[in-house]
Image 1 (cartoon, rainbow, N blue to C red):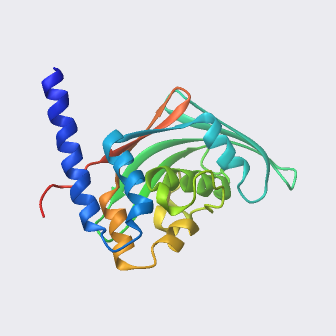
Image 2: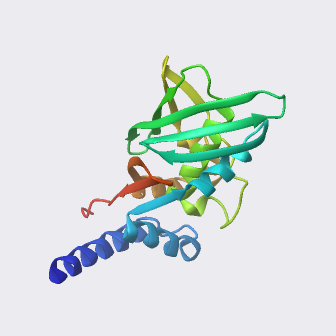
Length: 204
């Protein structure tokens, strides 16, 4: 078993090195460590506390709480206009296309009870976890993604619409990072949203 783990780790390192070679010409020194960290771990968890912080910083929100359980993210928020919002999100699909859309979708329940600013802020949190180099560590200036309704009970978000992502992708070379670090799946676990990253191909 140990030999197998060592082989997998070696393979991951080769994949990471190839990825770094592809982004030569950008601020490699500042992004390489974060890139290797994501590729090596492959899996990242956003705790209830991190998700709650993201939701609480959404436009028009006075206070918020996010709790992950039973396969769903439950959101309870008080808005600055006095409205109370309660809804849940269930990750449904992840669609990443080379040099194209970086989309995630959620089933929402109840269909008309959600707040798009909160959903967009949570998507911004997911984008920052996937691509940590889009903003300084600890930064809350990520911005919210644009949320669209795919069906009456399903929401679609393109992570490229997150303001911090748009600011970062200013050159073709920088944009390549978003094809190297691909989100493979989202899964709600007790107390956290788990992100699984896809390793880049080893072909030149």
